[in-house]
Length: 189
Ligand SMILES: [Zn+2]
Image 1 (tube, rainbow, N blue to C red):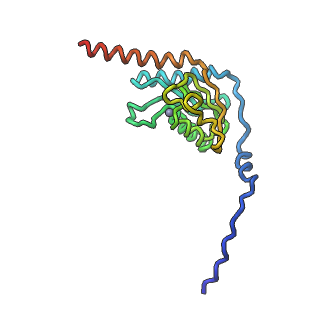
Image 2 (tube, protein in one colour):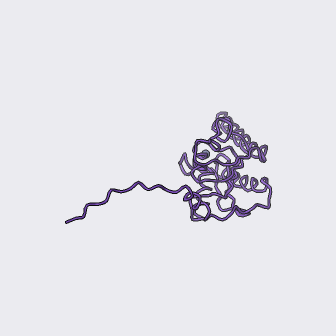
Image 3 (cartoon, rainbow, N blue to C red):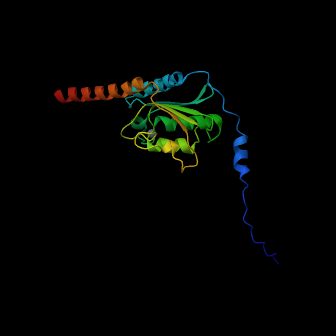
């Protein structure tokens, strides 16, 4: 005859358990380069996107002095509204570290993150986000709202804005100007 099972006692997870998970992660490696150095790498990615006919937005994830994830916008070629530069760079960084937590990583992106990417940044526990141009139509890192520093979420990130803002913004304005010119030429034919 089966023994009656003991009622399960509610388990109280000690508060330090959360801390112990984090304590296994080594201390944040320091970067010896200024933010502009890494933003230039994100700009390189944006230019690759442009060469593919994509809106030029690029991102890199940096751990210490190492780029562990790169990405550029691939929305048109992938036919995927989620193929933003940040999403691609985050996935590559997680594969590199074999971890979904990117606790000591910094993400550099040429354009202020949209709500989807800001969500992915929070979910990946990225420590610091550095962006170039602000996005008045979708920016969720301070312009329309600030999802990266929402105190009700379980994670907030440091945010630095306006790094190489002119270069990052010009990539976009030039791209859209050229696009308009091409359309005008086609209409004129
Ligand atoms: Zn996005």
